[in-house]
Picture (tube, rainbow, N blue to C red):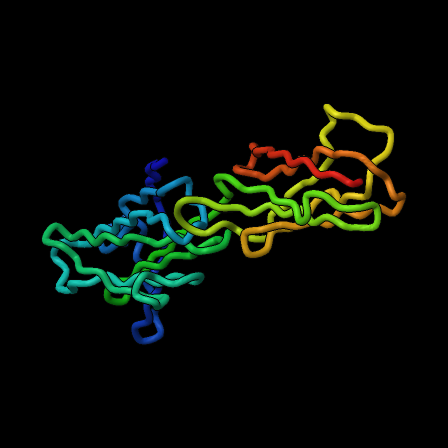
Length: 229
């Protein structure tokens, strides 16, 4: 999803001339440099894959031919936290901003000559698109343990680590007694695992559900059948 955000910024530029100070007002500064358009890609998720478009408008009569961008978090595609872009014949400079690999507020500064302006872009959690649920082993005796593992993936970009994956017995198949099963695990390296233990030496088949978030409000469930005999 793409949407366009027009940013209006207010800045004061103070200069010193023989100990006297003067100010450049907002209108004057906007003639020198301003953010004209910010097109946020893919809901601003921190997937280290999507690219937002930053457009800066400068005075077309300026003798400077570059705008330098700086970010306080993450790197540009050149591998550095600063990058220079060429100003075209109508005074515009465009930047393709690679999204960071973790949720963060990125302070983006655009500089031309001795003037600079700032804007902040909030990058949000990158969720999985799907997952695979595995058991190791699928069947054991009353003294054994079973590891349940949810492996998360998405087609493009990285998944934010440290998300909560929930595990629970299928409520549509109620039993009187259950083995011990941790309620959740935190993702690491795109996976989350819990270990089912059986301190009461129960014997039965159990349908276990794993629930993985795919957005701030939605999740997907998958089930797996294990057996203790």
